[in-house]
Structures are given as structure tokens and as C-alpha cells.
Picture 1 (spheres, helix red, strand yellow):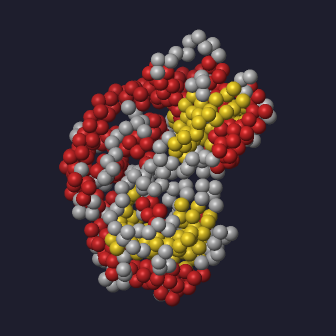
Picture 2 (cartoon, rainbow, N blue to C red):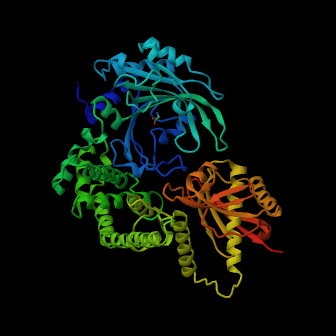
Picture 3 (tube, helix red, strand yellow):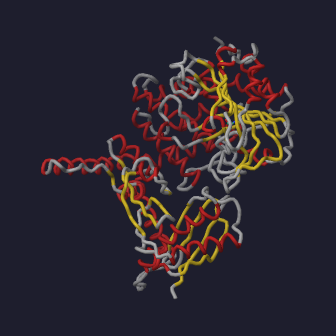
Length: 611
Ligand code: GLY
């Protein structure tokens, strides 16, 4: 079998499309410019959104690229065979130029052609869209595949969950797609299909036929032009083509693995635990290298992209400790990535010194407190275990405690620099969970205190301030629900701050609200206040809360039981409280300001007036 490397696959892909009239464009930054609804570029299409919507691209209507992407939704799964937080997406683009009848034969040619991937035609399966109320069944794509040479029985019609792609953020271009799979082994049953997890079908590529724009209201509007967006994940394709089971066995990681072996004296694959630690390090250091080395250079911090970077580096440090990785080693691993990737991504070479400096600084900062923090964590776990043992001995019906309190998790964050996600992961290893809602509450309390302190404002003397902030808290829930009703379900809380005078609420929304929208939200909140609705607190399992569609700012999968607050049928949120007992006591709600608070984020300030 031919051995594919990352270098020759990139080159082969770009070359194929260059020959077919495409201009090769460089990867854009990891921070999206055109999609404020997400922190990172998560797909090849992000940087091209304006052009997919009809703006003229300076390089023309046919483009091809390799885009660096970051997806951090599954950080905790990194360590298995396939999850990565960084990946490269090979893509080609038709901006209102060719469509299905060109793209499908090209896909077939690239997959099967002798000088390209050379996959036997009978080892390929494809899926096409089965049709629904937004778009019809894609018989055209199926016919084109059959004509190209795919066996009819290897063409599967699949629903929206499988064959609809995008938008990459909350709004934007999207459409039906056709996906291509390599058949690895016989089907596990007669009904087995490319969606089956038995491993018979491995996805290698997709062609999106982009005809729609999803609006902030959740509507699908026909685009002015028909586009094609194809995506072949480089890591996954290398894995499939070379018959590997793990992305970490591709050439992309080979020198980094050697480096970690050299630094620790351990061998990749020597045990499950060691392999897991290697993979976390391999993935996280690579992602950190690309984040810091990006043309927009991210630095570790406590907010947004910087927080994700901090969390990734600190998780890498923790896993490094498990295999005796010496301090200062992250930068040495990063160096191997700079070497490996600098031809495709010259910015890494340019920012080489910065990458080492930032990694060393963050590692040193966390190393100082890590040991003590781990001790503190152990103390906390021991405390729970001792209490459980003592109580169970006394009372056989005693239900053991399994939750680490929010205050303790906040202490670990505030004093020892443990991101709460890391504490939650360590807790999980001990069969425990963290009370995330209470952590959030402790965090908020701390923020409010330091804010009050820094502004020199003291609440004393205002006997009623606690009641008032509680009311504003309830008003915040009403506001959140009203915004969703008026502007669309996609609107979500991005931040909140309450003083005894006013509430402040940040949420994602791509433009300024109109005067009518502001009034509509205000009226809706006041209507609910007039209805005198009781505010009901219930503690329920998180899974149940999710099923019943409670909104949660911090939907961790760790907290077993969460506090929920319902206000009639109008608002349902996972929240630590406290709240007013009844909306009737809130007074009159008034929005005093609506303004921007960063890219794609709006901010509302509102007050309660008591007459
Ligand atoms: N072509 C869409 C994607 O896979 O990113």
C-alpha cells in the first residue's frame, strides 16, 4: 500500500484543484473575523463566509486551501485514538461557479485516480440527502455518483442529521451534502450503513452544496449564488489512507512522540495510562503552538480564547506530570511542531520565540501551585470519603456524598489556578462530581466583591440591597427568556453582572437591536411581572434538566444534581439562585441601554423601578 504523508497529501490535494482552475489561498487565522458567534475557526468555511454570501473574492470564484481549525467542545475526550482539538481541513470552493455535476466527478477522480488516492471504486460508499421540508431528495447527486462509477448498493440516502452541513457558527451559509466513505470491512448486519459505528465505513471527505443562509431567526433563505464547500480532514484522511487506527500514528506526531519519549524515558504504547498522557500532551501542545503562533497571537488569560489556551496548557502540564515530564518540556515539544509545520504555516517559524516564551511562562506559573493544589484537592476528596465512611457505619441507609462543593472548586481556581474543568476531570477520576452551578455562583460573588472594592462602593447602609439584587437576578432570567422569544432561540447569555442599582446582561446577537425590539422585550418582561408568577426552585438531575430544556449558562456534564428555577412556563434556567419568590415584587422593568460589548456580543443595562 502507498504510504501517504501530510506533506504529500496537502500538495496532491491543492495540485489537483489548481489544475482545475482553482487558486491556492493561504489558511486564515484561528480567530474568525467574520463569525462573532464562536471563539475559533472551526471549519474551512469560516474565513470565506462573506464570499459564500456573494461578496467578490480577490482570487476569483474557484479557490482551494488547507485551513487550520480548532474545536474545543470535546477537550475531555482528548486522550483516546481520534479526538484532537486542532486539525487541518483540506478544501475547495466554488463561489457561485461550478456545482454538483462538476464536483462529484472530480471527487470520484481524486479518490480513485491512480496518481491521486487510488482507492478501488468498489471500496467506496457515499451518502446523499434523503429530502425534507427544506430541500428535496438529492437524486441528482446519487445519479452523478452512479454515473461516475460508484456501485448503486453503495449509495445511501440519509436524513438531515447526516447529510446537512453548516452553518459553522449560529448563522450563515449551509446546505445539503454528500459524504464519502472508505469501506474497511464487511457490514455488521444487513441494515448496517455509513452511520453505523461498527467501523465498516470510514468517512474521508464531504462535498457541501451550499444553497441556504440560516438567519438569526432560524430561517433558511436561498442564497444569491450556489456554492460548493468540500472538506477533507487531513488527520483523519491520513489515518484512513494509511490503514491506521489512531490519528496519533500519522507522520504529524512522529517527531513529537520521539521527543516526549526522550524527555520522559517512557514509550508511547507501553501502557494505556502512559499512552493517554502522551496523546493529551501531543494534542494540547500542538494546539497551544498554533494558538500562540497564530498571526493574531493568542496569550493565556482568564477570558475567551485566552482561557481556552490556559486550560489546554494547564491540562497538558497535569498529564505531563503523570509521565514525569520535566518542567520546561512543553516548549521543547512545541519546537518539534514548529519544525514539522513551518513550511505549510510559516507564521510558526516567525513566532517561534513567542511560542517558547508563552509556554514556559504559563507552565512555570501553574507548576508553582500545581503540587499544593493537588494536595488541597486530595484533602477535599479525603474529607468526603471519611465522612461517607463514618456516616455509612452509623446509618446503613446513608446516601454517600459524591459532590465537591462550588466554594472548594472556586478556591482551587482562585488560589491554585485550577480551571474548574480540570478540577471536574480530577473529580471524575475519583468517581465524584463538582457542583458547577455553585462554583459559578462563587465566581460571580467574587467578581462582584472585587468590583465593588475596586470602585470603592460599599453596600453598607443600604439595608435593602440584598432584596434588590435578588429581584434583579430574577429580572435577568425574564430578560433572557424574553430576548429568546423576540430575537430567536439562538440568543444566549454571555455574561451577567448585577449591582444593587441595575442589571447588566451580555448575549450573542449580530447587530444592534431596533427600538421596536427593545420595547417588545421590555413589554414582555413587564407582562410576566404583572402576571405575578411564582419563582419555583427544584433540584433535579442534570440529564432531566437538559431533557426538559432548561437553559444553562454552564452546561457541564459533571454536576449530577442541579438547581433549576422556573418562572411559570416562561423561563426555565439552571442557576444557583437566589431569586425573588414572585415576579409581582419586581416593580417596573426598564432597559436603559443597549450597546455593543465586543464582536457579535450585545449588552443590555436595565433597572427595576419601584413606584
Ligand atoms: N465541508 C465542510 C467541512 O467539512 O468542514
